[in-house]
Amino acid sequence: MLESCHSTWIFDATRMRFRRILKGLDLDAPSASTAWRPYFGLELDDSSESFVVFLNPEGSRLLRSWRHVEHCPQCGGEAPQSSASMNCAAPRTAEAPAAQIR
Image 1: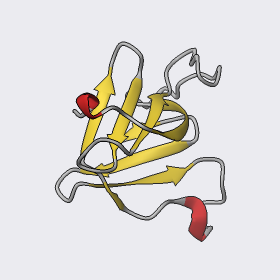
Image 2 (image 1 turned 120 degrees about the horizontal axis):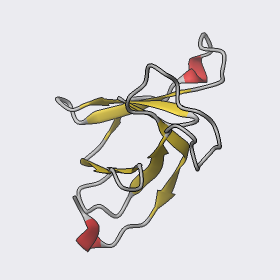
Image 3 (image 1 turned 180 degrees about the horizontal axis):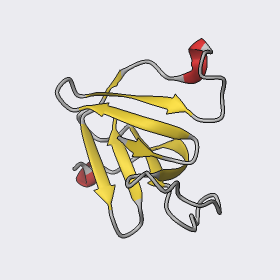
Image 4 (image 1 turned 60 degrees about the horizontal axis):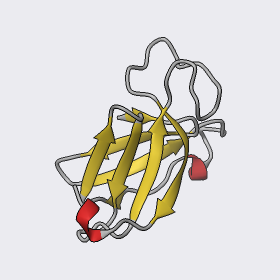
């Protein structure tokens, strides 16, 4: 599980799927979480607190986001006391060169 400013990211490594629970919404609403989506890799960068979710085997479709940390440079907020793997910023879709795959 990873946390960003806007979402909690849940990964099912056994079935290679993930979903996001959106923060700041009425949690009873059906749109408060995304559907399970397949993923083909997860790359964590401890030096920048970023992570990349690969959406296809080629690595050309991906989501990139940042962990929410204390004194967060992405949102300016503070990390919750109980979360060790928090992340920041709304994920964005980006193209990655083929050499960047995992």
